[in-house]
Image (tube, rainbow, N blue to C red):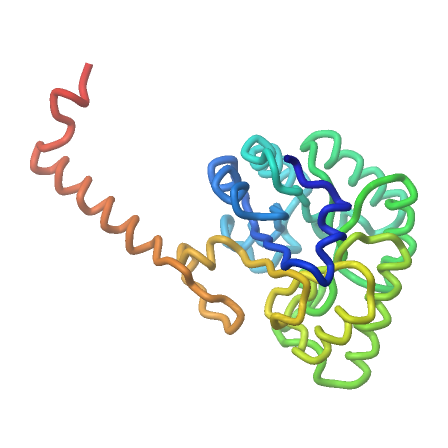
Length: 257
């Protein structure tokens, strides 16, 4: 059965939410059997296009990948990142969010920020556009990769922003690289689920970039656990193929018309 927004909200304090990123139909169709939420993340900028930051990802690129992902999803909730500079004001955000949803048939959009985007989120939710929030490390605006919550001012801001986003109508919030005790405090003080990435198991769920999880992306960061080494498997398969071609073992008669 296809998961709805309410199904995700109801998991709060009951069962953990499983989320992963996908950028194509084939990957999405595999994740769909195990995930509650599949995110078409603007992380595709660095993962697929070797961009220096997610700020270089365009709306067109997000839409094209999302169209592909949509074809692979039957059960999971599908969320799409709104890229940088596509929600600078309520009017722009509404126009672009409607475009994303109408073309990709996704279930929700995700925006980064707190108080700064309160009115924008409110405008979207009032127009019945489901929104996922994103606090802590904000790749679209932060210039350095540092975990959040060391300073008391930072802690207060993130907690207040979480409450603001909830009041604006978001159905869940991603907490990225948020200090453990702060993630626990935020999770306990809002009534919507938190989904962590580098924010401890105190969150209501977890999300990772699939390419990191399977070892396809050669990244080494603290919050990623590599469950597979798919690069090794690909190398092995390609090596065997190259050997077969050079030794005239492929294609055989059964592979030919």
